[in-house]
Each structure stands twice: as structure tokens, then as C-alpha cells.
Image: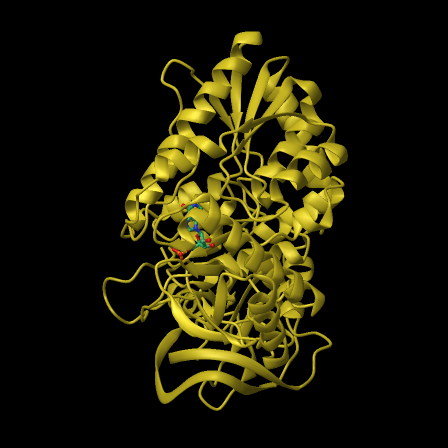
Length: 511
Ligand code: XMP
């Protein structure tokens, strides 16, 4: 792989994704990893990411000189560029001119990194220090007003660095710079494609699972659906999927899983209708955390019972999970994040059933998972589905969850989603929760009569990873249409509001 050494910027994942966009497999490693361990992974190349520290302060993480002497091609970016300069004998100092954002760069000598690119180009900068003297053997190839050396390279040693951020979309030629590094300086053949990933994973799963049986909890979401389809491609009917219908799904979702998914994959699916059970357990509950805990607990119990039944027919040894690469990177990062909301996943498993996990998506980003889903023939509607929380509509009804309230929310939600899709905007919005303020009522007028109904809140958000989000600026015409349709077609709702809060301070869901 190409290893991206993470110096603590949020850019490391972006760099890894851009490398993969160039069809080269990449992984992220923490900057605390010793050089020997990095080299033991036999990297095809190494990229040092940006980071918040200054190379001139004492306690900053730095690459050792040995990293550059192993004959492995290295590209330094921003902080990584400066750290590389210092490690090899160059000088880094504050220039007095800080550069943040789009900056014009002049290429004096294209070298390998900037071959064929315009002499003047815009690059995205974010720095206070800069490299003032390049290490011996390096040619400075570009400059900006605040960075006399904005890029350098030593082609004979396969080393290069850039002060700017080639991984961000604001650097128009950034992807070309990365490709030049990967293909021309590092000599890597671009052969990381989704069909190769499918082939490799299918072989790996077969080798691992042999003739044993595998279980998967299907949620209807993209990750578990693609993971199951991949495992099914590898071991066929040795896989059984369990789908728990907890009654907190959106209109048409259970049917989609039951029909479309099974038709597309031929997977063995066991559907458990637990709608009444969840409603009973949720009766009278209004506290968000209590509701979440009840839903999580009931889910595990129902899944457990189903797993036992499947296991009784023939013992199950493996359990599929749709874990993605960002989760792996984040949990490896070891920084304990505060428990803002208790998220529910199929974590708790029956003690007497010992499963080994199969996580075929552990090395993949979400967009790659979607492409694999499409290659495996899953329906587009499923592959492009917005993320949906495990507790479902249960945490989008503010107040007690009842069958009647679920019906109201489902109707309003279906209208909002249909109109978003009709406007061609569903792929530009990350998620579009509709929230029912079930305990709030307001006065309205319909025809000649007074109404006393409930408000719903539209919560369209844009996001890269759900960690931060902004409210989506949907066109007024679309909002008007959704509002008119909901208030006309859902009699219990007489008011539609729009949530214009970013995350933070808001969260995406209301509970
Ligand atoms: P918040 O509301 O914390 O949500 O901004 C962040 C993302 O997580 C989803 N979410 C969940 N997903 N189980 C899940 O699988 C949960 O319990 C859960 N709660 C929130 C939410 O929809 C958003 O995408």
C-alpha cells in the first residue's frame, strides 16, 4: 500500500481517498508508529500529511531521517513537507506572511511533480512557517508570495514535497500532482479498482469461512447490504440474513429489503416482525436516551432469538458486520470522544453463541462501498440511500412513540423524500430527517375551520462524514412544495418548519 502518515490534520483521510481515486490502494498510519514498523509494511510509497504543529517547536512528531533513506518514495505535504525539509538538513522558518486559502503559485521548474501543469496556478495553502532553504540535492520547483519554496523534489531519491494541499478540491491541479508523484516519481501501477477489490474480498472470505455458516443482521442501510452481498457472492447459501422490522422504518423500507434486495442478490432472508414488541416497550417513554436504550436492548433480544433459531438448524460460526475504514481509523486513533448519544449497533451478542466477525468493508470508504454495491447489482435506491439511524423514526418523534404518530411521520417523511428526489437533489444532501414535534400543537386554519395540529421540522443537512454538518440551502420552491404537500396530505400536520442549525452546536438528529 501507499501509507499516509497522519500528523493530526483532518486531511489524512482525504489524502488516502485521493490516492485511491488515482487507483492506488492506501492506508493511514499514526505518526506515532516507529519508522521500522512503517517500513516493515513494505509501502510502495509514503505520504506525510499536514498537521497543526510547527516543526520548530520541541515536542512535535517528526519523521526520522531513516524514513527517507530506505529507498521508499516519499511525498511531504504542508507540515509533512516542512518536517521532511528539517529531517534532511533544510531550514524552516516563519516568513512573516501567513497564507490561508487560495493562493497563486508560480512554477519555475516543472520537474516530475508539476510536469505539463500551468506555470501559474491556484493552490490551497494553510501555513505560517515555510521552507526557506531546501535540503541538499533538492530542486525548488515553485514559489508563492509567502512560500519562497512551495514545492521541491529530488527525483534521483524519489523524494518530493509541497507546501500546498494537493488533496483538496480547492487546488484544481492537486489530483494531477498526486498522480505524478504516485505514477512518475514512485513508479506505481494504478490497479486498485472496485472489481479487483470484489475479487480479492471474495477469495479472502472463501478462504476464511470455508464451508462454515455465516449470519448477518441486515438493516437496509448501504453498509450492511453491501457487506452481505459481498459475503453472499463468496459463500452463497452458507449466509443467512436476519432483518428485524422494528416498525420504526420509513415508508416502503421493509418492503424494499424484502423484495428488491432479495431479488437482486438471491440471499436467504429471515424477516422478523417485531413491530408490536417495540411499540409495547416504548409505550409511555419520552426521554431520548431511555428511548434509545430500549430500542437498542429490544433489538439485541430479537436478533438474539432469531440467531438462535438459525443456529439451531445448523451452527453459525461467523457474523458479518459492515464496519467501514473511517471507523477503523478513528478507533485506532485512540482519542476517547465524549458519548453524546448512545449509538446502537449489533454489538451485544448472545454469550453462548461465539461468533467470529467477518468485516469485508473494513478497508473501504463509503463512496467505494457504494461503487461495490452497484457492481454487485444492488438496486440504485438502496446503494444511494441516505444514512438512517438504527433507532429509526423512534428518535424523530419528539415525545412518546405510538403507532398513530409513526403513521403521521411516515407520511410526511415520504413526501419530503419524494420531492427531494424529484428535484434531483437527493445525492447532494447527506441526510434529510423529518421530525415530528408530537407534543406540540399550534392553531391553524384550513378551509373555513380552525385546526389544532402538530408541526414537523425539516432537517436537510450537508456533510462529509456526519461528524460535522451544515443545514442544506434547499431552493425555496422545493421547500414550499414540500410544505404545501405535507399540510394538504397529512391532516394531523398543520405547520412545517425548517431547522437552520449547523452541527455543532446542533446534532443531525433531534434526539
Ligand atoms: P447525530 O444526531 O449524532 O448523528 O448528529 C450523526 C449520524 O449518526 C446517525 N445516528 C445513528 N446511527 N445508530 C446509528 O446507526 C444510532 O443510534 C444513531 N444515532 C444517530 C445519524 O442519523 C447521523 O447520520
